[in-house]
Image (cartoon, rainbow over all chains, first blue to last red):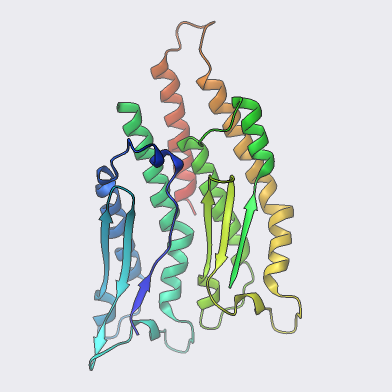
Amino acid sequence: MKVKLGVTRALSPVFETGTVDLTALLPVLEQHAAAMVDDARENWPVDTGISRDAWEADVAATETTLMISLSNDAQQRGRTYAAYVHRARSRRLVYTEVQERLTLSLIPELQADIAVTLAENLKGA
Amino acid sequence: MIDFDIKLQSVERHLRRKHGSRRILTAGEFLVLISGGQDVLLQLREGWPIVTGQSIAGWDVEPVQRPFIGYHVTNSVDYAQYVHRTGEGPDPLYTRQLLAIRDQVLPPIVQRLKQTITETEKYSQPQQADPGIGISAVLGQAFTQARRLRRLVRRR
């Protein structure tokens, strides 16, 4: 089974004015997506390194949506297995640790950066 | 599956009183809301039993500005509402966490939010008495506040 982590956040009502170009936030998204992949890889247990290296992020920004998709579809013998990875002598699935860090730190940091970047752009406008 | 809202009604009242009407939160105020969401999430995870880790990782706290100011709390794992510690129960653990959130976690968040709103409104008032404080100084103070709060979010 592959891992695909998704968390949805409603955009601030500021975005509803229609005057904000979401594509301008693409660099912020890319920077955070890279940090999320680094975080997932850094704390991932390594045997062959296949599943650690398989973490990747997709970034997309349209007029109404910002998206970072974090996934891991590491395969061995034709089967995806990242969702079953655990440390020796532990039943804890390691992807849940990645998910915990995402919701506690990485996503709030992203939201904070979007809010501040947006405010700075409005200030400059 | 757990899904509920936390509405910070006293914050909404405070905002209306200070601003005169309902408005969108500024970046600085929103950062306080985000930081409070981290506190709520930490409390939900506090003492939560871990076997596979799926139900503890399933907790999510989304800061909300509309239609209310507060948080949308979910746990998407289908058995999360039945989780309790070994030897405890039958009351589900999350109901106890909710009481701790209401009594211990939310009051400081509400206080911080009210303070920040008061500060924002103070700085956004027209400066008549002191001609030395211009709009750039006011914006500068607001962004210093936002940066300070962003560091607060990062420190978790």
